[in-house]
Length: 289
Ligand code: UTP
Image (cartoon, rainbow, N blue to C red; front, side, top):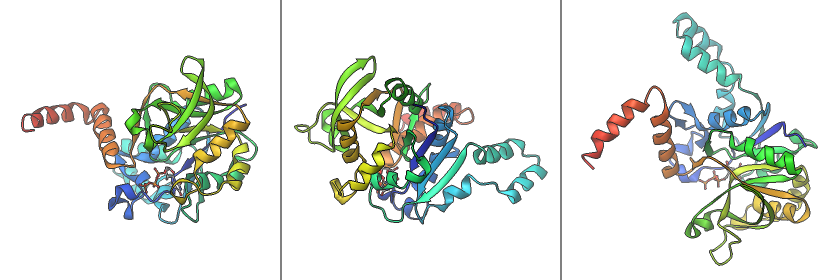
């Protein structure tokens, strides 16, 4: 098994980030100096992926514009000798081969993934949710690809979450294979603490085999009336090998305000242009809190 392609579902309505996301896609909100989606594309590229499909919708064309060339702007930056800005603007457009397809109706994450069938063909592929950002030494999707290739299996990225929080996620039933890698035999979406299989929750990264497409085509609406990826993954793990990777790294859900602010602060503290200044600013501020 060799994973060469990635799919980024980014067609959700982003209702938790309104009113900003009424006209600006949540994937285009700036995290320090780059839009959220760029961090996700960079993670995929750093894991060796070259072809990336973004699932969009009619209100998200700012994403395709961002990854395109912008000759007027580039000429102006060139004339003004703004080499650093010019190379950043160009770099974004040259990161990867990026393809787009629209999810014409917002019918859920599983439905969004099913739009990728033609792009993916008969190969395993990576999935990175468009609002989940990972901070890690080794790309999180790379950690999953490694395990998927080793076990010739699909893979889900997991971490433990508190029992009170499990109802926001999908819980997986696991048995250990090696350090940080488990075999998955069952899962459920947004379980109550009584229903959950374990504290391991699926967090925004997957490697899927193309078997998922036939399953998604047959999938009936689940939680919230949407075609849920977890329901299809459950069928997949009952039929074919699936592993869970307890990945090394910190995950930020930038699709909600707190996650977005946590990421903004942590990334700003690490950024060479803002880190030292922000540390000072926060120290001074803390006296007044
Ligand atoms: P979320 O539930 O986090 O995104 O979906 P959302 O629907 O935009 O969020 P809120 O609740 O309205 O704020 C998880 C992922 O699935 C994608 C989203 O873009 C996100 O990456 N998604 C969700 C789709 O692509 N299509 C859908 O129909 C639903």
